Structure formats: C-alpha cells, structure tokens
Image 1 (cartoon, rainbow, N blue to C red):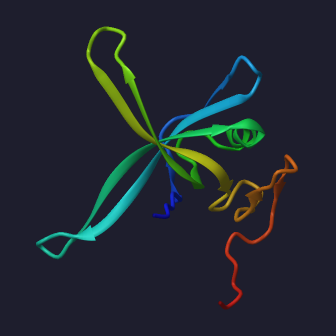
Image 2 (tube, rainbow, N blue to C red):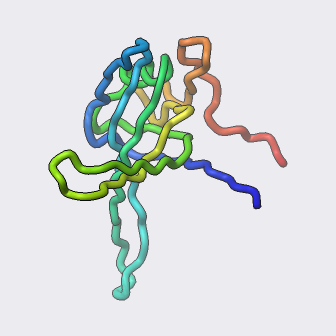
Length: 137
C-alpha cells in the first residue's frame, strides 16, 4: 500500500524560533505555530479553536527562517509529520510526540517594506515571486 505524508499549515508563531546546532554543525530550528479552525457553533455564531503545532526545521532553511520570523508573525509551512517515542528519564514510562518537520516555508502577509508572498529558495536568499500560482489546471 502507498503512503503520503504532507502537511501544509499557515498560522502565527507562538514563540521565537530557537536555533541549536547538532554536533555535525547542522542547524536545528524549533518553533511553535498556532493554527485556527473557524466554525459555527450550535447558536450559529462563529467560533475559533486554536491548534498548537510544534515545528522542527533543519539546515540553512531553518537558519533563514529564524532570521525573518519572530513570535506573533505569520508563516506558511510545508512539511511532513513525524512521531517520536522514548523512555522518560525520570521513570515515567514511554513518552511520545507528534510534530511537523518543515521542508519549505513562505512569507505571508505584508512586511515593513510592503512585501510578502515570497518563498525561501535553496540558494540561501528569499525570492519575492508570487506565493500563489494563478495558472489554470
């Protein structure tokens, strides 16, 4: 059976990106993203329900992301789900966590220079091409 693991999220950062480095020198960037679900309740009034997602990004893309984003800023993230399991060091049994490993990100919203809608390319610099492809299918 085939599998498909792709996550696309857009929300606001819940904390500043935290940059650490592996022993190999690879940057590891971790941050949180709040994504809201908007729905009508039984009284026919609109409600918003936040979902908080932990995100991990590796390499130069992560470093670039941390330079451009801070707590509260919007971000568009593409990646995949990961599930980790481990034994609690304090004898608390098995622990687990589901999180997103980001592979790509894009700017959303307007910035101080009136920009927005760009993406981070592997060349190491942001490009300011349209974020939405308007070409028909």
